[in-house]
Image (cartoon, rainbow, N blue to C red; front, side):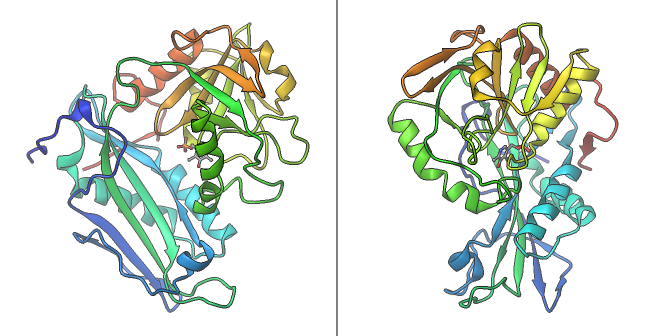
Length: 341
Ligand SMILES: *Cc1c(COP(=O)(O)O)cnc(C)c1O
């Protein structure tokens, strides 16, 4: 297999069409076998459920080339489980986790030539998703669905070094109590577009969302979970039913406990206490951890001890350990790494 002729180190985070994508259709109450196809376009009825009532959910994970040259992916079982939960909440049929894992591995295999080489910092981003595809005009779940997976190579998240971010406390809410904040659905992103455009216009990288009910507790950003490090090096992460359960965050908590010997505390985090923390990071598949240097609360600046020059020491260790595990440089906990063969 010859790799594609791409300047891997220069890639950004954008869509590039790769060779194959996986498609399975749900019709008459069941999923078909699924297939790998070449056509990247989808033809839909003008009244498709996804277009009218936003019945769509997704996942995001990556494939890596390890130090020994093998292609692997990271904890796809958890993405499969999360997609099952998202489907149930939006009255969509479950695409079984076992079939999900198989389809993810097959799609990566079919696009092997697009998996960036070890050492490039780039990865192959894998995007599974599902949507209601038949015509729906009265408000109800669709009867037919499509589950698809495409891949796209993405560049190193931090080109030219890691720069801590300045974020703002949003005046908008991301997720209601007992709403859909804990599932990975397009609808949670549609409503976050205006707040993020406003934040960018004001010069901030991200929004910190507070809990909608009391606006006193830290939830997450539009697409990443928070971790904080206390001055005595404990990891604290917000607990809430309206936060999306990040697989990166859950993995980092295990790394903190089992690899770095740090205490990990999942609890409600009051906004009023964040100035006590030494470090703050945003966790997600795209960047693993992005350091936050400053939070702007309506003009009042809350600065973390780690500063604006580099990533905090503990966040740096967490990030290096997890990326080391993903790239096969550090031994992984059992069941975390799935070889693509
Ligand atoms: C996807 C997502 C995350 C990050 O989850 P990972 O599984 O770590 O990629 C965090 N918050 C939201 C709202 C998300 O959609």
